[in-house]
Amino acid sequence: MTEQFYITTPIYYPNASPHIGSTYTTSYADTLSRYHRLKGADTYFLTGTDEHGEKIAEAAEKAGVTPQAFVDQISNRFRSTWDELGLKPNGFIRTTDPDHQHAVQHFWQLLYDKGEIEFRGYTGRYCVGCERYLTERELENGKCVQHLTEPEARTEENYFFKMSQHFDWLIQEIESNPELITPERYRNEVLSMLRSGGLEDLCISRPKSRLEWGIPLPFDDGYVLYVWADALINYLSGVGYPDQASWETRWNGVHHLIAKDILKPHAVFWPIMLHAAGLPLYKGLHVHGYWSMDNQKISKSLGNLVDPLVMKEKYGFDPFRYYLLREMPFGLDGDFSEEAVVRRINDDLANDLGNLLNRTIGMLHKYFDGIVPDSAGEHVLSETASRVAEEVDVQLQAFSTQRALTVIWELVSAANKYIDTRAPWKLAKDESQRDSLAAVLYECLEALRVTAVLLESFLPETSPRIFERLGIEPPTGLLGERLRWGQLPAGATTLKGEPLFPRIETD
Ligand SMILES: [Zn+2]
Image 1: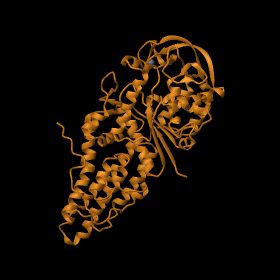
Image 2: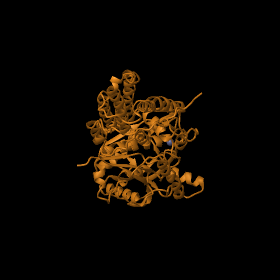
Image 3: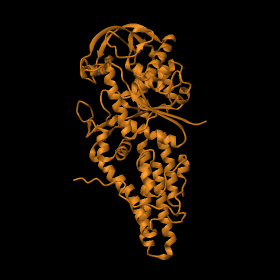
Image 4: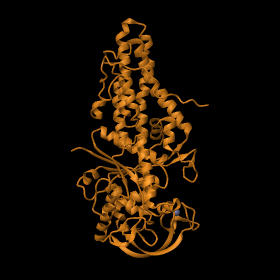
């Protein structure tokens, strides 16, 4: 049976344009989906926008437009930005889509029918910024720790999902499956959250009298659903739940990629919602850190959002994408600075990789008129190449693009070092060393070809340029086949050309 790989990003909240955080997550998911597709998995990559809730209603009012007009505009901006950056989701879901609304209503009706929902009166402290009632421990000096505002006292009757009766089940589930939440620090964080006793049942409704911009509860028309109770279901509706038969197959291979700020809804609400509905859990929840800028928080209010389109204009998107995927260790935070982007471009891309291509092809032109010689190579780098390919696979199964790229650069370094050691310019002086010279250059060309294959998922615009310089068509077939050592054909005409990545001059 074909392996399923279904990867999701969070659906982005369209109160701001795409910035470094959403660009990072989307590039990350794009890379993983390309990689698994290349390996032969039946792959689906879903992203989208989360369009309901109080904050959207307020932002629309401020902008003087209807909420629908407001979200239409911003959702389009997300879609067109990903398109412009060459990020290729298979599906783009909007929570205002009729299919999604139908799925959400179906889901909550199911839970209602199963007796998982209760109608209760509740008095609490409500934070407008958080769009929810806060618990005692979320307050500091009576203020919301996140928004630094005093929550309002509110009393209302609402529908509650009886989540707390499933906490023990969830603890067991997480304990028995170390792969469910990664990296481990977040798994531990969730377990201690669950054991702390600080979590309660989940209020899933908002009376229409104070919020109209939401999906109506299927069993009470006087209420709309709380945004998370609506948004999380996108992962199901995005693959056709409940009406299209194919959704269950996709669901068997589902992995969620999120930033650490939305750990609780994804690691507590969502698995319990699925369990209560009798649906299987996700395969994995993978949590990455935050980007800061020059060690400051990145936020709309600080005005230091990083616009990916500006980065593309300035550096090209592949180099920027390389920086994002290489710089942030999986699970930890990353600090963005343009100096660091430039350093990555100059050191890794221009010096290591670009230079390897240039010097190899330069020597081939000098000694063999640019034509790939008829040689099997020396089979020195082939071992490194196959070890690297295996390690890349291990790292990507563990969702670490940062380690995977580090490993690919081991092959690049090995090839550069090999040239230095074998010194083709010395071999070229001795006619009796002609076969050795051919073998050494073939070895480097093939290492470049394999590097380009390994980079296809990370740098989709760069690999085809390397193949072109090597004088070959982009390879076809699955990853394993593409990686097989020794496929560069004798007689191929390589191209000298502009540097793959021009160095960026700094002063
Ligand atoms: Zn708040």
